Image 1 (cartoon, helix red, strand yellow):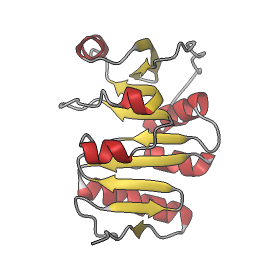
Image 2 (cartoon, rainbow, N blue to C red):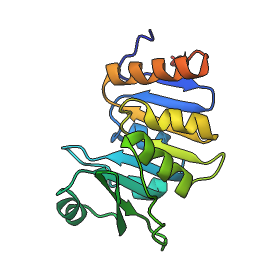
Image 3 (cartoon, rainbow, N blue to C red):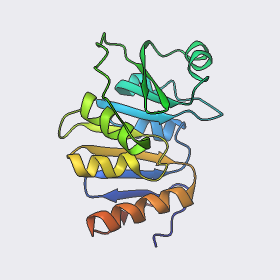
Image 4 (cartoon, rainbow, N blue to C red):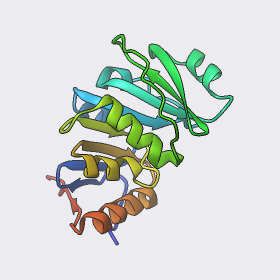
Length: 180
């Protein structure tokens, strides 16, 4: 089991996973400038408006009743909302993008992630996940040839995602050594 601490950066082949404050300037400056998609779950202390300058499209996964208040409280340019399964997805972009056709059935967060990644990215694109959850975005990127740049404040969440990736790929995550 990987021993994860705040401040660690992990290399998983082409993916990068960071444990720490995902809203800090240190982390924001580290992000690639041309990320195709950021997928975020709504958190209590939202301070992720920086994502719209780092990703072409930002998708925020919300529960029923949260979308109106959320969209009016932040500064990202709202394009449309999608109802996928029982969750809402607010889609933001500086670009004008057309609303995609909604799929007939999507099951759970894994299905929503797969739909968003397939809809808004191509092979080799970067996808940003500032909340690791159970590693759904990381695993989907691995399966589909995308590059995942992920972060989370919780060392246990990062550890679970690393273990899930290692089990799925049969490879070892490598902790980046800090230079002195």
